[in-house]
Each structure stands twice: as structure tokens, then as C-alpha cells.
Length: 186
Ligand SMILES: Nc1ncnc2c1ncn2[C@@H]1O[C@H](COP(=O)(O)OP(=O)(O)OP(=O)(O)O)[C@@H](O)[C@H]1O
Ligand SMILES: NC(=O)c1ccc[n+]([C@@H]2O[C@H](COP(=O)(O)O)[C@@H](O)[C@H]2O)c1
Image (cartoon, rainbow, N blue to C red; front, side, top):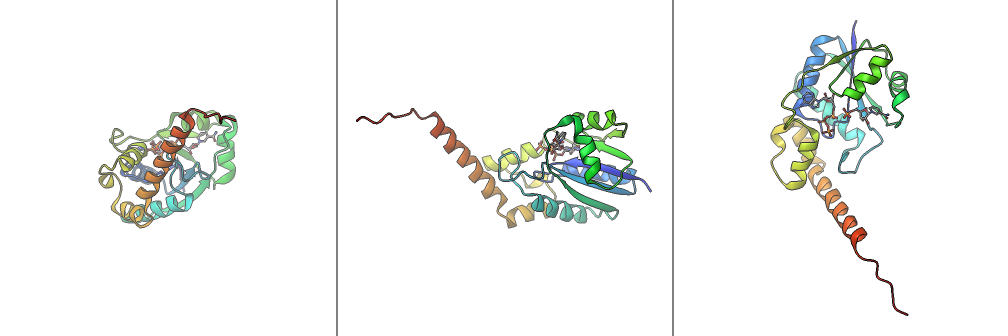
């Protein structure tokens, strides 16, 4: 029985992730999906909580008809590259091969002796969570880049409103920081 590991932040889950996971599922019997930066939420780079990202993955994998066994494991960042792969090994069930398109992740696992497969990329120009978050902030269409079940879930939790509010807050804070300091006259 062969098990694969795939790590992403899934902010949000998009069609590129699902294509990548279809490839991973075709190569192994079981897949461990590590949810990276699990401690992060409510920022422009990481707007969604781990539980929301889990819900998106469950719904999207169900929609795609992925019927193999998978495990969803939250992985908070440790910001310590030299021991990150060992840390991940301590947090997830045993695995035989790592699938990734992230060169740092590939390097850190290869250096620990793991087999690493660089999975194919699909339309990275638009199938990227950064592009989807940008479109959400700027009010452009983003729904076609994610599975239908994920678009529905994001609407349910008012995800776009959250991202826009985060962008507004950031803009407001930046303006306040740039405003000249007024010294009161006595
Ligand atoms: N378009 C894509 N096609 C195939 N795999 C992808 C695609 N986009 C991301 N991945 C894979 O997903 C994993 C990273 O997940 P992540 O959630 O960080 O995606 P991302 O879209 O690059 O996110 P962000 O833009 O927020 O950094 C990597 O292993 C990467 O190879
Ligand atoms: N030192 C660390 O904490 C470390 C190192 C490499 C990857 N990671 C995490 O793994 C995930 C990789 O996913 P991305 O491909 O989205 O970057 C991210 O959450 C990233 O923060 C963390």
C-alpha cells in the first residue's frame, strides 16, 4: 500500500489543486493532504481558517468523485526550514512519496532522503490562489477557477466580503501610518 503526501495552503482550494490531486491519487493508494500555514487566517494572503479549508477540500474531492482514502492534517508553520520536513514527518501518518510543485518543499524532503515527484502544473497563470484572491478583492469573476462546491461554500461563509474587508482595513492602516504626525500646540 503506497501513501503520498501533498502540502498546500489552499487559500482557497482551486481547480489547479484538484488537477494536481487527481494526478497524485492516480499514483498512490492513499493521500495525506497537509494544510500548510494552519495557524493563519484573516489576512490577505491567508484569509480562510483551517476548518474552512478542510470543508473546501472535502466538498471539492467529493465533487470530483475521488473515492480513494485521504487524510487532512493541519500543519502550522514553524518558520524553521532546516527541521520542517522532520516536523511534518512527526505530524502525519507514514508516507512513501512527496508530490509537490513547490521547489523548497521538494528540496527539504529530498535532503531528508524522501522520494519527491514534481507534479504537473495546470494553467498556473490563472489557476493560482493569489490570482483568485486578487480577483475577489478587485470584484472580478473568480468562480470559474474553483470547483462549483467551493464557490458555493465561499458564498455561504461570505468569504469575498471577508477578503474585501481585510483589503479595506489594510488600506486604512497604511493611510494612517503615512499620515503626518501632528504635534499638538500647547
Ligand atoms: N495550477 C496548478 N496546477 C497544479 N498544481 C498546482 C497549481 N497551483 C498550485 N498547485 C500545487 O499546490 C501546492 C501549493 O498549494 P497552494 O495552496 O500554495 O497553491 P497556490 O495556488 O500556489 O497558492 P498561493 O497563490 O496562495 O501561494 C503546490 O504543490 C503546487 O504545485
Ligand atoms: N519552515 C517552514 O515553516 C516551512 C517550510 C516549507 C514549507 N512550509 C509551508 O508549507 C506550505 C507549502 O505550501 P505552498 O506551496 O503553498 O507554499 C506552506 O504553508 C508553507 O508555509 C513551511
